[in-house]
Image (cartoon, rainbow, N blue to C red; front, side, top):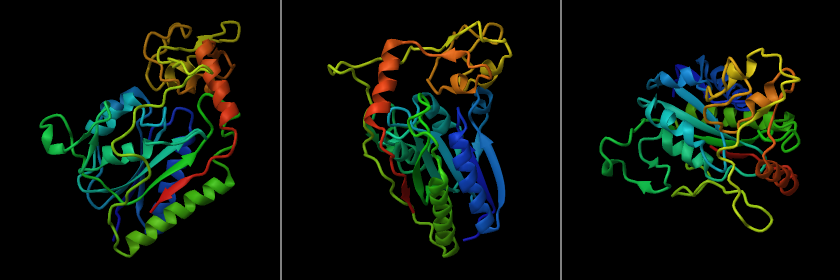
Amino acid sequence: MSVSTVHAVYFSGTGTTEKTVRRIARRLADKLGAAYAEYSYTLPDARKRELTVPAGDLAVVGCPTYAGRVPNLLMPYLRDMVHGAGALAGPVALFGNRDYDDALMELSKLLTADGFTRPDCVKLDLASVPGMVHADGFTCVAGAAFVGEHSFSRTLGAGRPNDADMAEMDDFADRIAARLAAGDTAPVTVGGCDPIRPYYTPRDRHGNPINILKVKPKTDMTKCGNCGWCAAHCPMGSIDPDDPSQVPGTCIKCCACVKGCPTGAKYYDDPGYLYHKSELEEVYARPAENALFV
């Protein structure tokens, strides 16, 4: 099969998903002799614009794994604003060394026309919810979950993706290209559960749930130079550009501001958040493996 353009489409707060998706998409474009294009839906303004990938094109669509699933606040964009129009897709989920759980399955279902996953985790027939479900029309010919440094941590998954991971990315792209060159565009079933399970709930050592949904970063004003970097790069547009110590909007804990602040002024001090971060670093210190489905 001939592919006209390979599209790299990604949400990437700290740059890992961008790095991964771009590498895979660029290699595919090279192997297939196709043009290359990219679209980041990381910042709020980008998610106001629809993206249509035409038939004859291939989109490598990436997003991070949050609590084992596609981030809740990204689902409306992926469901309603990204359209396949008969194009092929290769969903890619990045996860922070714990587990990708159902994130890859959910992303695949959001992109295809034969299924949809609601936030309440119920499996639906598209025809049963008229006007509520958009069928994007992608055919997912492959899918993968790759390990990256956890957004909360600088030690969990540190150095990932490494050289071995990037070699797997190249192999993933090569295997997709070989399938398409042979005219094989059959859809692939990726890892995960269907119906999609609820979001992973962190718990303390007594088994009590830890709720960090409303936790927001703090600012050390002795370090802050009011450069505006954090406000300009917040994927939710939640940081006040005139006073970066204020976060009036929703925080999704992507840690773009914490890891990207030029002076290290951003941090979290919530006890529940810090306990959860410490537990993840202790329990999931072993190197997780990538998962490829081609």
